[in-house]
Image (cartoon, rainbow, N blue to C red; front, side, top):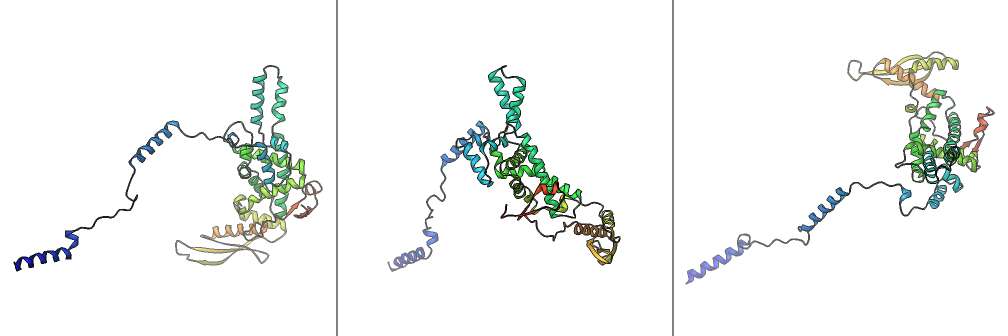
Length: 347
């Protein structure tokens, strides 16, 4: 009897000492952590199938949406560029010739043969912005050219033309017009609107500002929105200099200075694959340019390139552009005198 009690006590102690084997604990699962709704997969799969069946969503212009108000948008645009312009003028500046022609053709189809050919041609050209764009293009080009000459007085005409074409390129003008919101306001026969109509609309806007606000305001608009695209740009990339030594010889000859003389300033690693030569260009015993290169020829060409950039005034450590003043445009073009500087307060 005593032996039986001893065995039972040992078994109880054994169970208490090894609970993991005799009584494994229950697993606690957080609510919603390991669950999955079976109907969710079938529901999402059906939605995806219907989306593929319908096809891609057609992209519509902003003017086709329900909350579009043309008058409010035009008024907001004039405030956005800080100009007081008539709503009719802005609407004409943003009307492309393709839209005018399509509208005139629609009028002819509706009215019939009562519209004569000359009347139809007049209807085509009266509402378009082609003439305004040409006027704005001339104004912008003249002012940008004068502005570049004021900032870089020693830059040759070739460099001035390269910077001018960079700023007046269709891609750059379309970039400015897109970020001003012209893409949503332009009337164009088709969608999406390509770059050319946006660029023409921006130039037409310059012409409109010139007509209603004056030439100074139009030049200030060109300065603030178009010329400022030069910020952060590498002038050397816009105006690449080729045959640097030949150009340098001709430039120094015109300036009445001595011929350029190359001198080796430093060198290292001549017998290795990473050799480096540092060449300086002297004129009248004055260092005018220096640069490194893998060979003597490359270093000499790069030093001549550095000397030309310093003489042209487009070196990397030049002063930043001065956008705090505007220039009276036709005082330069017509009289040939120095431009009159107008402070921003007078503007």
